[in-house]
Amino acid sequence: MVHIRPIRADDGARLNEAYERLSPESKYRRFLGVKPRLTSSDTRYLVQVDGRDHVALVATPLDDPESIIAVARFIRSEQDSRAAEWAIVVGDPYQQEGLATALLERLARAAAERGITRFKATMLADNGPAHRLVRSLAPGATRERHLGTVDEIEVELAS
Ligand SMILES: CC(C)(COP(=O)(O)OP(=O)(O)OC[C@H]1O[C@@H](n2cnc3c(N)ncnc32)[C@H](O)[C@@H]1OP(=O)(O)O)[C@@H](O)C(=O)NCCC(=O)NCCS
Image (cartoon, rainbow, N blue to C red):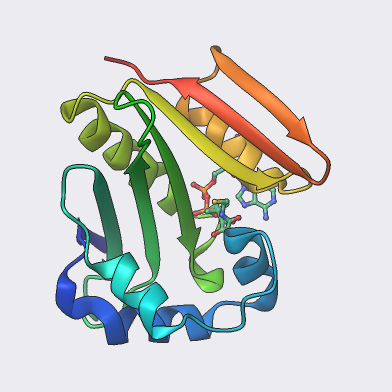
């Protein structure tokens, strides 16, 4: 059982520890490249969200609230206030249990409440789980761009 809550400014150390625990493949898939660890400015940026244009949710085990096991976030587009880019990562031991689906549903609801109608994600073309996740978010209306090894997929959010 997990608890889902908004990220907090004091989550920096917890986020770094969560990142260190990820497998190289999960890190690569999250950041679309090699990124062994977060820099201090990455961490600052990732925890200091404004709750409106940048929203992040974390999951912690009910019996271990100090441990972050998954993070989902969206950042509103500067060019289009009704669109946002989202990203997600679930710790390797917790994958394939529906956690990303649950987090993404919550994230999409938070986005819709803030006037966002389109959700875009960038993922490796061979990232099967991420593609399945997008399909579960919006089975029908998607717009896709295939850019070599990377796919950009945009969905309309249910209002
Ligand atoms: C993508 C990711 C977030 C999915 O997390 P998760 O908690 O395992 O996802 P869920 O359990 O909610 O499953 C989502 C879908 O992916 C499928 N899936 C998950 N892991 C899978 C795997 N290893 N192989 C095949 N399908 C898989 C599930 O069956 C489900 O599909 P369905 O709804 O059609 O049944 C996770 O694999 C991850 O963190 N990967 C590394 C980072 C990343 O790729 N982020 C996405 C790009 S931003």
